[in-house]
Image (cartoon, rainbow, N blue to C red; front, top):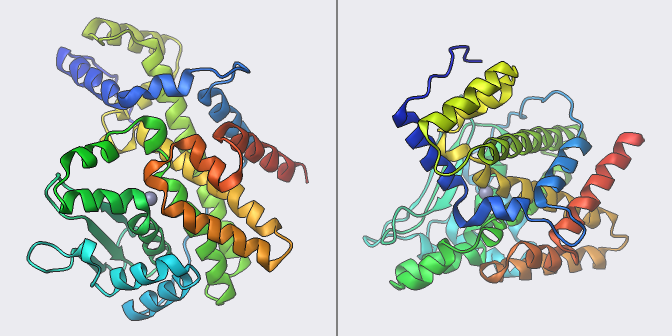
Length: 359
Ligand SMILES: [Zn+2]
């Protein structure tokens, strides 16, 4: 923890005000705090969620030693279960997918080996309206590499991303804007697809003998630790934003910080210090909360299926879902996948985890 006392300057307050405005873009604060007919807000739900989670200490990722070709073959085999996605995934991994070829005919997909490197990361995105999308993956020799590729591929083949790439390629800026700057409730569904894929992929790796049950448990525990961190971040940031009037001034921020020091609320002071980190703001993290929670409710249902046909049906529904993500918002996405809205799904999740703790 950084123990130096936080000193607020005019410039700091201005930057902080900008940061808070970014977090609150597309009505994030209203989305989180607006209550439904039962007087429950998404923020209340998240608090309930945080209380229902218990975690144990995190185990290290399993090391594997596979060649790039072996990794690609495993992932192709996994996606082979999805007739609609199979071909796209193969083309992406073979560097021949037209959506990932730049104006000079070169593939925009890079897979790098970084033995002993940090964690592997991947992203499907765009830099500016006129650029093609990139899929960049760094391999470091852990099972996480496989999962990351499977995760990013789910984004790459989902309609939300595909339509964005098409809008860039066909030079349709309005269409692109519509897909990029839509409402918050819509933007946060992107992580559902990739987290369902991760969970299915783990089970596939278990069947292949690459992971064992304990590895999957360790993965799921890691997911819970991340979820808890994300929930805390959202709750603390929102707590700070709610205590400040808009626009944030040097005076109002100094008063809040002084009050927090008097109350010995060092957690919130730490959060104020780290709120300048652009990637880790609550608006961004909320999508991971959505992804982790909805995918865990989904996989629980999937495992509870008593017949192969029921499982197949869930996979087909999921595959169809991926082709519609460009027109779904949070509630319609949850309804399509689980037959219930987001609130009901979170409540289900809380009940499930509470039950597990009782056993
Ligand atoms: Zn993702």
